Length: 120
Image (cartoon, one colour):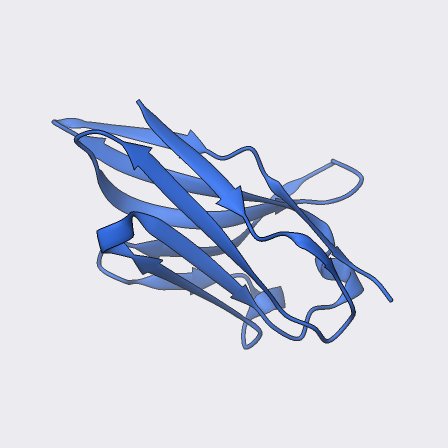
């Protein structure tokens, strides 16, 4: 079993920055990919924000390109999302998703979410 815990959300003014962290813990696993998704305040959809593979191939949603940076620290099994130039429309609950390999199996885990509010 792998636990995924996000942290780093909060309230920030437009134009500000936040860094989200996603820590995966457990035994005998390796991270295949890690991604950040966000659920809009109306709860109607969850959209991909950014993903990164173990080979450091990254993918960004168009609405965050040039503003957000995804990275990982493999030694710590932790991923990060550096969010810069935040806009009110970035307000959402952000979820970490990770796909891990345990033995011969691949499993997907989600964190509990962290709230990001961009407001003056």
